[in-house]
Amino acid sequence: MAQSGDEYKELGCVKWSPLLALVPCFLPCFSNYQVEISGGKLTFGYGPLHCGTTVTVDLEDVEPDSVTEGIATCSDNLFSFGGWGIRYGYAHTDGSNSATKTGIYNYNPYNGTYVQFYRKSNRQYYRFSCGNPQEVKKKLMQK
Picture 1: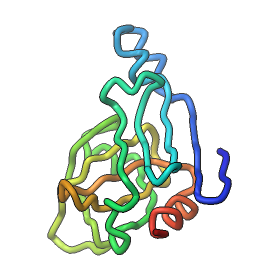
Picture 2: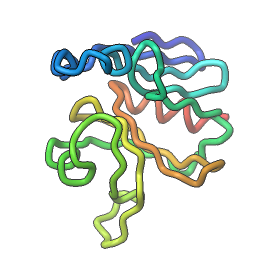
Picture 3: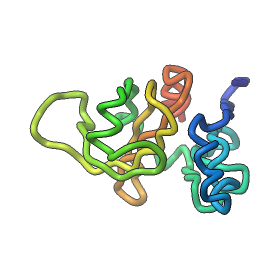
């Protein structure tokens, strides 16, 4: 992970990428996972080729008050999102345990820390795994 000024970069191999050997056509799309903040944009997702498996968001499109961080357990990923990878599921967006859950696009290559935010332009929540959620949250909340 490298951070300087308003930039942040995290790149790593996906632990389950050896399973993609069973379907090698997907290997270029899902072999790596990245989180990057630079040039006023946030990019997160899979693969060196970005085969439709990454999301890029202008930082101005992030609702600052919606940015949260948390820790997803194995059961969170399995029961809220049906597993790992690029998933759509329902979870709490306000940190409560209320009955109300919201639809979230989840990019989760592993259990652990994540950052979640609301994208104003398409009125959708996103959650993505990252190694340093405090740093990413701080950068997303800056304008």
